[in-house]
Length: 201
Image 1 (cartoon, rainbow, N blue to C red):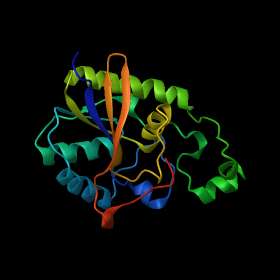
Image 2 (image 1 turned 90 degrees about the vertical axis):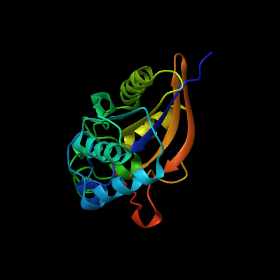
Image 3 (image 1 turned 180 degrees about the vertical axis):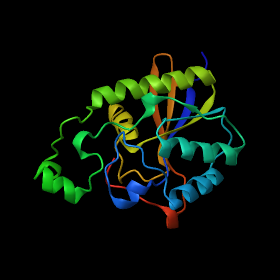
Image 4 (image 1 turned 60 degrees about the vertical axis):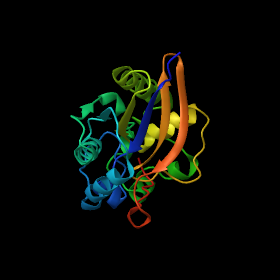
């Protein structure tokens, strides 16, 4: 029996809204200057891959494009099912603005109208990873650039706990094949002086 595909699933580089502390969800802010630099430097921590696949949101696609260019592979394929979860009416707001509009929601873990639940995120993201695995075949490897909420949802589905919040260009290896979905090593692709850890999706 052939081994499953190995997929390195990572969060995009810092976006302008990450830097401002704004919830992004399915909104489409670009990478910040630091985010571009993070992506360039992250490539130095990577080996060869058979494919690079990304969410179609700009912050993920541009991160993936930079990585692919630095690694000499591509073109980058996109899959909208790798998009960040919708954060509903939190999108575009800072935590302070959320507290003003939705008092107590953050502290109590309540969700606003339009929030995409875990089941929906998991179904589409797992489907996307299965398609990536099929495209690279058994024993193949792929780099997948997506979003923090997506990665957290995949990890929770496998019972994996993360000691710290997921940094930009942090992620995890997953193994994916017919009837198989497993989690592997946690990774961080940037040096300590470039680590950014957004609190919002």
